Length: 133
Ligand code: T46
Image (tube, rainbow, N blue to C red; front, top):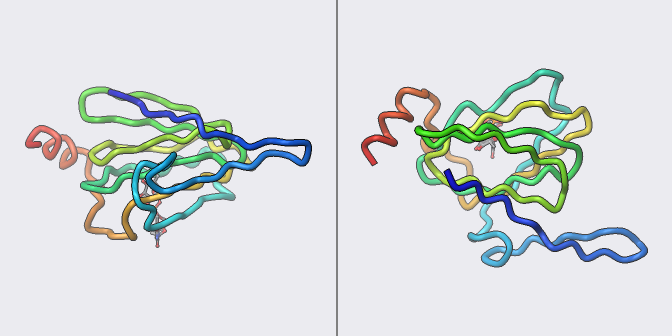
């Protein structure tokens, strides 16, 4: 599986750092939604789904967490631990997020508004859908 972990350009000076996210530039789609998760409890593992069409970019703007990405034939673990790293998550990739640091703020930019019907929450259904693609 091709893991797309992009390095986001940081504009730093003596005052600190700044990263700008721009649709169809360093974010490879039109941004329809932004959400972020924080205060994630110890040993929490979340996600456990794939999306039929949604594309996203995930950035740990503070702290760190891990992703398990699974395209149905390969599983890869990715650590996000820097605000200048953007993980592109394509559709039809099963994802689980875990090992959140106490201070982790995981921000996600998405190309669609929230739509429960886009989720595939059963792993066997996911495998079948990948096979039939
Ligand atoms: C994904 C991973 C990386 C909303 O009302 N609007 C939203 O935009 C989102 C994302 C969630 N919600 C509600 C639905 C649930 O009641 O927030 C609650 C938690 O969402 P969920 O259980 O889907 O969270 P995760 O961490 O399992 O998954 C989320 C995204 O839903 C998902 O698209 O790819 O983060």
